[in-house]
Image (spheres, rainbow, N blue to C red):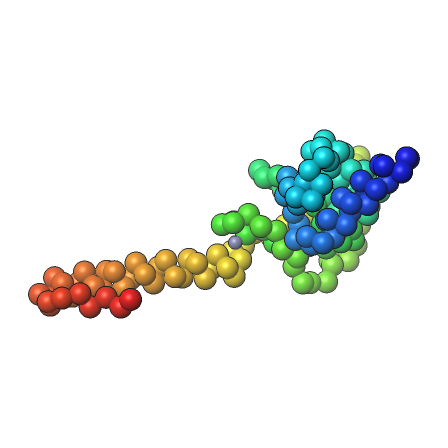
Length: 156
Ligand SMILES: [Zn+2]
Ligand SMILES: [Zn+2]
């Protein structure tokens, strides 16, 4: 591997680590391009692939969405927010010997697995509560107006 490739690979690895948020290839490329506009998208994507294969980072394949990249290469579990699509680590112990528990392998060699829970992240939950609340207070104001009260009682 020549020096330029080494530098680029290191740059990609550093960016995945620095972002540390299960970023997509596109997000990783965008971050690198901010400081290094000369680097091509193909180079970043290719290096992500190599780093994942070398297990320096972990590629998480998300059904129906872009793959994302994790600076923690060891197996761990994730939760994906169904609202914003962001992926977070789940703080739990690994289920031991999961692949050994498979009864009939049907001829497969099981290599690896990803567990991705579905959920709503705290930020989206908060945003959702706020929306419901402001809808509720609008309804209340509406009710009051129907009752014939004068003026605008809505809080700022
Ligand atoms: Zn969210
Ligand atoms: Zn992770």
